[in-house]
Image (cartoon, rainbow, N blue to C red):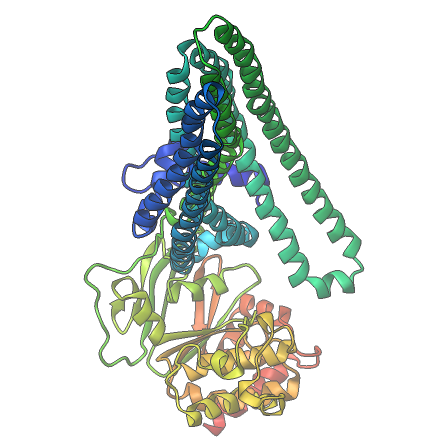
Length: 625
């Protein structure tokens, strides 16, 4: 598991911005936020209109003091009741217009923001599906989950609320300052000079807050990972009585996040001191100076009243700078985290000029295949060091070797879950890299030892690879996998399986996963010990049924038990990254010491099957043929 510091290094340094090859984290706030333009361009007209509406609301508010100046001056010289009623009515109309503008702003911007969020979420999910397995090996799922949910929600709130008010309030402050200067240049200058510390503090705040915002969102991802691991591993934690350990780990992660959030809150509180204290100080100083100017007849009482009313109108735009700036920086971090995934190189892509296999027969060839994992050190030796193996159409080959020799990795190369680093994998004479991934995975189906099911119906899980299958084909796949238990479920084939199929036993999950591979009707079937969780009797029934399927389908079977070897026509021995022997089981038992050592180390369903008995059984089977 990557440490948090290593994750940050990986996120910031390894993933570069597409196009100009500049790391997203190195861009300015404006350029970073501008990167969402392709996703937000359809919403921009309404966002711009919403900003205009927000500005209009502020301008109506600023217009009221302008009228008050003349009203106060008139009432002080020639008070009249009709003037008062007219003034109150006019102010009420302006207030209503301001409210209408606020409602219009909300109506304009809220819906487009949700569309942008949905579009970005679709793009992110599609990218996650397209990225190779090597990417997912590196990234904790909680980090990805926090990007799909929390980060995109932050971008929506900023687009619908933050950017609109930030622009409108900034323009309002500029217009307001001009209005203040129109009352008297000395008062305007006082208000302007006293606001300078706010902008200086805001500049420093940006640099400090951005680092904490990034750390906070990464820690939130770590916390999500802790929850996910605890939920998925709840049976293990309970079985070993390690609930307190998981709780302690979660609490430690939560405390780290809490500490970071408190630091963020401290920065925000610090800038609020400036945002509240400085304008209040400016108003106090302006009032004193204004009174002096009134006494000296350099300013009217109405102008002073209007000046103070205008400063009241500017209070909200000025005070909002703090939280709008923090929201903008949170949005910047969210955009960075979004594009760290979207910009991640796919690595395994479809060819520009893809070939097709019109009439697949299922001949699979591994030709001088080399492989080592992408994150391996440069001087590390290859895991596979020149594997050569040919499976003729309709032939089944068992792949056997000691634990960790690369059997499962070798099977993953056939469907390009990983890419070979040397040599080639050929399907019917075509390099699998010359086929689209979709077509390749139509011809080759896999059943893994660790059976993963989805929160969907039994039918949808089994027909995942070939949803157009008929009911008869579905029933046949279930029969071969001996998955008759599905008919006893509450709703039969339409019963919804819980998350990852954990409501089923391990053997039931494996049988459904095997049925899924069989139902796909591939020309090549890859079986990575899919029967390990079955009891002896059920395994025997499945093996008998599989023999019928394997007569017509090319199969590569990773064998972890002697009984699985019985399914294959030939056996390939993987040793030190190479196929060192291939032949019939009985031949290898008689001639290869390492093969005998591997066979003796395999799980033998109770350890009651001796090697010699197994060889005798195999010979009897061949004689029957």
